[in-house]
Length: 634
Image (tube, rainbow, N blue to C red):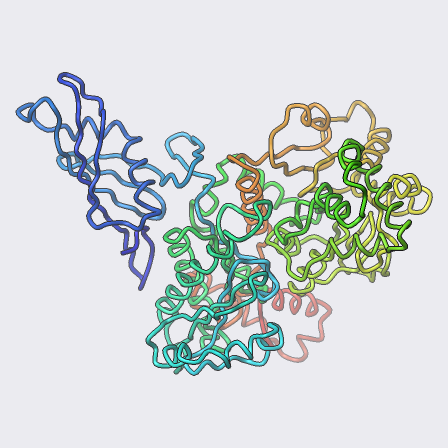
């Protein structure tokens, strides 16, 4: 029994529960004192408590459900219909058709938004560019068929996959006989996202509805595996909900290429329903820009996709999206962006280095009282005393094979430039998987029109460039003034978006100071230099930077919840920045267009049939570029 409404098979199927409430009261007191509940049917355990909370929180129906005065003064029994439809609870007491509506309040925190109560802990479906095998998820879906045929591309991308499938034994027989609809590969390495095999229809996909049943079963199995993985993570690496990733299921190799748009719509529907049912976040990872643009258009069209953010944060994400579309937005990436991949923050890195330094234990307390730059200096000196490579050790601790949601989302923004203080290569990997690899400054030359990433503090691929100690910082201005000049120019001419960045770095302070000196005092605070996404509102930070930066704080009960909310904010930003129409003239998506769009599409296709002499016109190059941007394939 699903507890959340959704669209399966083309028709909405909201779930309805009846709650029989036994209410005890004092004579003459209409307020509830104690309630006992009996659900019909019984919801899954994660749902029962939030349902009770929702009913408890609505005093209006508790009064309206009061029976006739003939029932004894000690209490009464009321029967209430609770209908769940896309995250909203509709309370309908018997005898009261009006009832009331409440947003489903999962977990702890609720944010009052007028008549609607939304939560920071509602499961979310992300749509991101990238490679599903390189996302730092808890589990992921691997398409196959009932014969367990897996294409060579998957085997090449996932070490150990071939051996794991070959060793399945009786589980493989159950899968081939369709006695199980999804298969969690056993004995998978605990530090690697868990693959879950999901079968596409053996005869190919003729209707998008064919993906619903296997995808639902696979996501439910992946949710169980993801929760198990998430619980074993260190507390510092846990997010609000386990994360399950999936590719474009059922198209291309699954035989449904001509139905890509319809299949994509169904994937989003099922991911949302199962995500809410099982308490997981889902990341739809798409390689095709046209698929991604269409997924974003679907999600923009639905009210409530980013309701968890609240209206203010959604508006601010949309304003940043406008900056991105006009080429003005420049991501400035801090260590927090890499945390979801398991990489340490600055303090965490120093602790790891301390553990390897052999510094006497009786000096640790004094060490921790030092400033971060001086801690790094002590550690470097200690490593050098023992003839150990300090920068190479730093590089080993600050890179990962898989990137998290934030690097993937930032890589998909329509921006040409980015700046980072990070040493890792997660943004570069995500950008390459999105088909938009950047040149790395200062190690590489930038060709005209090429994207680039400025790494101000060095990179793990060249450990000698890493800036970490006080000596590194003091020598920075002389050695890399050109790099600082680029960053200052960005502050003056673009809108910088600081993400995962604590605004406490000495080099950042130097950059901001120099830019402040250039700007006339009369214009300070009128046009801010950028925006900063923060994990907490801080009055002192506002005093320090409020005139220069638009400070956008995430609200939540703990750091994990706020970090996850930041990911959802970035997801909203990307979806509104990606207004691409690469699907518009592509036959694989035409059935998703409205009648008016179909007519416009045909007019544009008529242009594509221009005669040879018409194509000789200088205007043809621009017409052809327009057609290609809309997905026309020669």
